[in-house]
Every structure is written in C-alpha cells, then in structure tokens.
Length: 292
Image 1 (cartoon, rainbow, N blue to C red):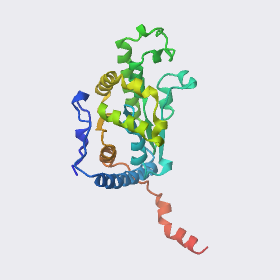
Image 2 (image 1 turned 120 degrees about the horizontal axis):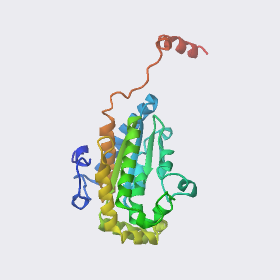
Image 3 (image 1 turned 90 degrees about the vertical axis):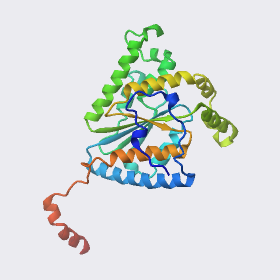
Image 4 (image 1 turned 90 degrees about the horizontal axis):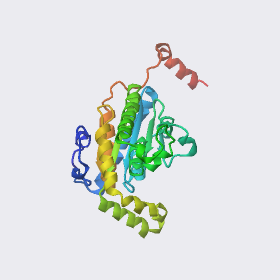
C-alpha cells in the first residue's frame, strides 16, 4: 500500500479542482484498505480517550462533498471505534424556522464539541457559501438587513461571508478547537454510477430524490464555488484537505490517516495526574477495597 502523506491532500496554495484526481486506490486491495482503516481508527480511538480525559482540546471534523460523495458511510466507518460519549455527529439539513431567526452560523455554533470531545459536521457552515451561491434566493430567507432582492447579493457580500467564516474558525482554534475540513472530491461519472445504483437497488431507493438530478445539472457551478471556497478559506490553522472520493474505502483510509497524523503530534495531550496525596495512598485504598 502507498504511504499516505498528509501534505499531498492539504491545500496550502490555490488549487484547480479539475486538475486534482478523484481516484486514488493507494495501490491496495479492498482487504488491505479495510485492515489499514481498522488499525488506524483504533489508534485514533485511543487518542480520543486521552483527549477526553485531558479536557482542554476539542476536535471539529467537517465533511463537505457533492451528493453521493460518501459522507455518511465514511463517518460511520472512521468513527466506529470511538467511545460514544466522546463524539457527536450533526447532519445539517435545510435551516428550520428557529434557525432562520438567528444568523447563519448560530446553528453550527451551538453544535460545537465541548472540550475533550469530537464533533463531526456532516455538511457544514460552508453550505452558506456553496448551496446559497448556486441558489442565491435562499439568502433572502435569512432576512438580512439591506438584502431585499437577489441583486443585493454582490461579490462583496460573498467576500464578507468568507471573512466571517475564517474569523469564526480562527476564534475556535484560538480557544482550543482542532479543526479538520475534508472535501470529498467525486467525479461526475462516479456520481452517475452511484445515483444509478440507488435506482437499481430497491433497498437504496429511499436515498434517491428527483432533486438529485436537478442539482447534478448544476455540477459546474458547484465545482466552481467549491474551488473558490476551498482556496479562500484554507488557512494554516484550519486547512482544507481534498480527498479523492471515487473509491470509498480508500477515501475513508486517507481521512483516518490524516486525522491520526495530525493528532499524534499534540504532545501536550495526556492523562491528568492524580493528586500527590491521593497517589501516596493508593495501596491503602486497594487494601480497603480488598478487605470489604
């Protein structure tokens, strides 16, 4: 199996998505990929246990990708060995009436992980500079002062929103949140195959919606806006990682490897030490329990 290098996927300079491969099998069989994922997610699970006990950092893992990119199954497989008390997954759908009564970041802010925990965002705050750019009429539903028609949504508006998102993430990092942002980069042909599979297999029919085809027709727009969002908001403290997603098993393995590669270098994360007085009496406590 090819060695997975985090730097190969991290966006440190402007990128053209059409030039980035959507397929990387890592020169490995499905069984080898499965074994590698099983090994690495166990190690991340061990790190999560220390992080939980340490209680000073939180980890926010963000997944974005076009429909059928494999976000749900990736989250299920990568976080399978986590202690359930240490990870919470949020899937963001169309904003509710309550959510629309707040600014667009509010529903994401209240879902952030507490110190010591992992939070996973299945679709993220970036929907607000992706779907809303393809469908700017959605912005009107936010009831923003000065935005009364689509014509009011200018390039300056989007620039301001990018800055708001970067400031939001900078604030989180400065207060102890480690951020991973993964874009699952799927080819148009592979999406077609996955949509056909949903139609062909009865047990997958429930996943299909006619809207999937309407959004697919807007493929080029989505790719353009994903590219701009990634290039503008990939920062040193909260970089984007573009993950080839045509092979689901390889994509899961790459994501898990990147997370472990980054988290294992946090040397200050450790189990808390017992009070010296309590430590000195451990044998006494053991004796007390054994003599019950």
